[in-house]
Every structure is written in C-alpha cells, then in structure tokens.
View (cartoon, rainbow, N blue to C red):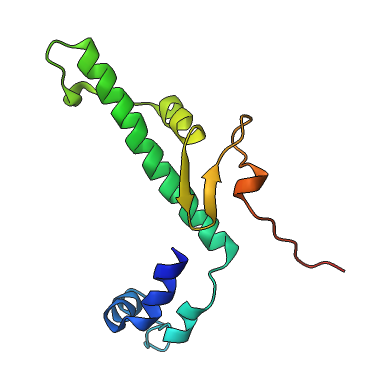
Length: 128
C-alpha cells in the first residue's frame, strides 16, 4: 500500500485521475494534490481504514467460499446459486483471517475483535 501510495505521485496518469475525482472549491476551482503529497507516509488512520476494508472484502470471499462448499455438499450436483452467508459467518471469517495489510501483518487475538500487539503499532499523541 505505502509503496503504491508513493508511486502515485510519480505517475502523471494516476495523479491526473485522482485529482479529477476531487470536489470543487467554492470558487469553482478543483482541489488538487501535488506529487509531493504522496511522498509523505499516510496517516495511521488511513492505513488502518484500508486494512479494515480489505479485511472485510477478504473475509466475505472466505464466507462465500464456505457457503458455496456447504451448498454443493447439501445438493445433488451442487450449485453456488443456492449459497448464501449471514453476518455471523462473515464475522467468523473476519475474526479468523490473517493477511498482510497497509499497517503490516494482520492477525486477531482469540478474544476478537482486537489485533495482537505483534501485528499492530501504537500511537501516542498530545503528551505533556
């Protein structure tokens, strides 16, 4: 993620596309990110948000795979058109997932939904 993030600032076509999707200011001009913006490390909230979205997508795929396997076993000849998964199945797939994300290796503790300390990093702000 962070490698691709930095490369966006160096890719004129990608930068043009991203800037074309930005909203207009009150004066009618468009917000635009300069190439230097992508040389900064993304804020930790960005990387954790990215990881959450990817995790939900990957776990939905896993829950779907489990549902289609169950549907195929439960029907003669099998059919993934009969497959479906519910929120509990999605939750279980997410809790049992491990993957490499933007913030590092993602692994959840037995007492889900918290990540293991080894797969996360901590931020302290506004210390006096």
